[in-house]
Image (cartoon, rainbow over all chains, first blue to last red; front, top):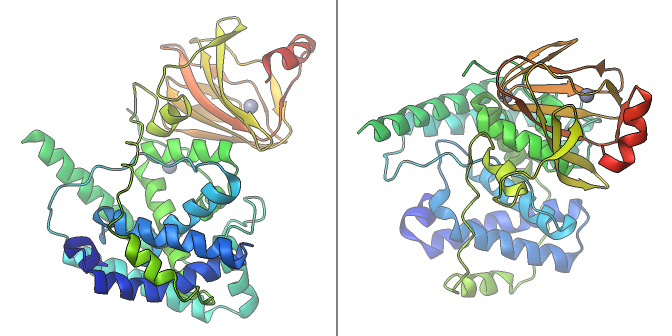
Length: 173
Length: 212
Ligand SMILES: [Zn+2]
Ligand SMILES: [Zn+2]
């Protein structure tokens, strides 16, 4: 993904397509799209990945999390014909060196989450999938999603604090 | 600005991240997240979990020529995306977007209380409320879920005090009379999935007129 972002590397984008296109399509079909419509949305999603690559920040999101939200937004645009209200973007510091320990930390957290998902009983796992595919209403979602999100929350919070701090420093200059 | 002490409940955050939250509530969540880093991190954490689910998703093969057509489109010219609507005064970006970039057009509800309906439809409604200091929102109860986010000033009711950035979550069981605290008018963003029911006769008669 970083090769796509930093060098507009087409081969790297091709690899990203091979990995994510069938998964995004799987997600869309699970959401009830037919083959043709799912392929159309997959095309939009992958083009958005290419065009918005500059906005990808590995300190704040995993590649899969980033593509998940692009696919979810596009699905809402197409199916519900409405745009999803989005929070204000936090300004990005231009050309800042990514903090390697923060990026590594995010990767580790995501890996632990994946392991936690793998350890769940099939029924529980099915619930989690249904939750994140948007099949459960907010009333059906119980207090706990069954995945431990606490540590990843604090990791992301750390990244946000750092970003705020640096933005403040930039304004002070 | 005092720290935010009333946040969005976890199931609503999960539903927002998953894209299943009805639009009126999603607007309140987006506005709150614009003001609250704790909840911004929560949404991002749910999106990481969504990404994990995507990673493990059962794969469905795409049409053979889809990759070629996507690759061929990489250099195609695209219309520049519209700039996201910026915060203006006390109104966060997503609220300004719902206002189409213009200041709110207030309609009087009497007693100095004003409202500006942003959206109303099958999935509920979302509005701005403007309550002068010391004034109350008419006594009412809820058919469904009500989310109220404070954008300016503060209000208090039977359950506590709510300042800028705080969200009050009301449901069928909550019957409350929010009163704006003394000081600048309290401006709130309020979303419901069902009409509010006012408890005194007069406001109930007025309900259809004001679309409350
Ligand atoms: Zn919050
Ligand atoms: Zn209420």
